[in-house]
Structures are given as C-alpha cells and as structure tokens.
Image (cartoon, rainbow, N blue to C red):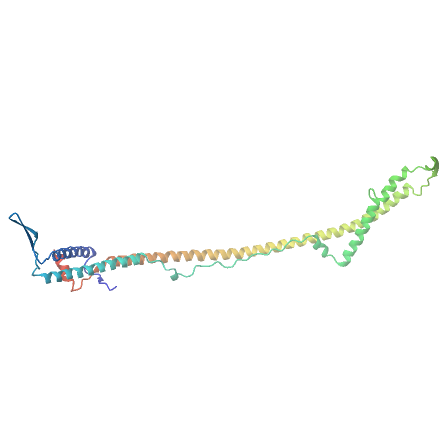
Length: 303
C-alpha cells in the first residue's frame, strides 16, 4: 500500500495515542447525534407531570459535528493504516528466509576408484601351463608309477607272491572221489631270491617314475604359487593406487565442504545483519502526517 512512513513525524506511540483519542471523540459525537429526537414526552398523573422523553433537538452545530466526526475518523484511519503497514513491514522482514540460491552450489564428492581384484588360481591353472610334451610325459610316468606301485606295494601281486612262497608245501593232497585222498606234487617255479630281485628292480623303476611324477606335481604347485603371489602383488598395487586416489578425492571434498560451510555461515551472518539493519530502520520510521490530517493531530498532541 501507499504509506506515509518516513524518518520524521509522529512516533508510533504518539500515533496510537492520537488514534485512541480520535476514537473516543468520535464515539462521543456518535452518541450525541444518536440522542437527537423530534419531540419530548410528558405524562400527567395525579396532577403532576412526568417526563417520559426529554427534548433533544438538532444542535445548531450539527454540520460542524459531522465534519469533525469525519475528520477524526479519517485521521484515525490514516494513522491505523500506517501503524499496520509498519507492523507488516517488520513482520515481512522477520519472516524473510535465507536465499540459498545466492550461494555457490554445495560441493560434490568426486568419483571414487573401486578395485576389481583378480581371483587366485588353483592347480588346474598350473597344469594348463605345462606344454603338451610335458603333460604327455606326466601321463606316461604317472601311469608307470601307478601300475608298478600297485604291483609291488602291500597287498599287490608281487607282495602276495613273496608272502605266499614260504608257506607252500612240496606235497599237497586232494580228494577226488569217495573220500579217497590223492597226493599232489607241488613244484615251486619261483624262488625268494628271484622275487626279491624282481621287487628291487621294480622298486628302483618305481622310484624313478615317481620322482618324475613328483617333479611335475612340484612344478605345477610352484607355478600356481608364483602366479598367486603375482596376483596378490597386482591386487595390492591396485588397492594402494585406489586408496591413494580416494584419499585425495575425500581430502579435496572435505576441504571444499568446509569452505562451503564457512561461506554459508558468513552469508547467513551477513543476511542476519541485513535483517537486523532493516528491522532497526523500519522500527525507527515515523508517520509523516500530511497537511489534511495535521490539524486533528495538533489538537491532540497539544493537549
């Protein structure tokens, strides 16, 4: 609205006081005008007269009273409009929100690096590293070692023969018919020395094949161990690189965030200072009374 608030003029306490006095005077005039009537009424009883309605004729200054009532109401309306406008201005300033759009956008953290670790290998990978010739040799020597070992080891054919040979008798008996026993001549075609010599020869062969089998197994195990060690180093290097990069990203983000919050705090402080300044400026405003209302104000201020 159009207001008459300025740095000079009536204070709000003066304006409120004048407004109250205007209101009281308007009420007095209103009551006086409301009492005007066209006649008086008298009752005669027992030789005495009693007034039922007093005469209250139109006052000679009725026009002046109406004009005064209008001037008072207009002045009061003027004062109350400006009092309310000042209150509205103060309320608007006090309810003003901080505008974040004046701040730079809040910082965003940079993209972090994530590792994709290489999985360890098992011995099947190690076997795949052998050449075709090596793997074929392994199949061969493993078969020799296995079959010779089965033949000479405990409960194998040669082991059973060596255990059985001393128990064989040179004469045995068999029942053919009617319970009649017939002698059986037993001829040993192996000697302990032969079987022992064969065992020693085969054992030496078995050791040779077994050593070759163990060579390939050890090679596969070593290849697997070496590859897993390499994978561990690669993974560790990748983790170290990602960690260093991510630490830098976090440090930059934390620094930017602290700077942003510091800027926000400063901006809010300046905003609050502006609010306080605006409140003080509005609070110091007075009502500059125009000439049309000045006579009424002067009448009450003088009193």
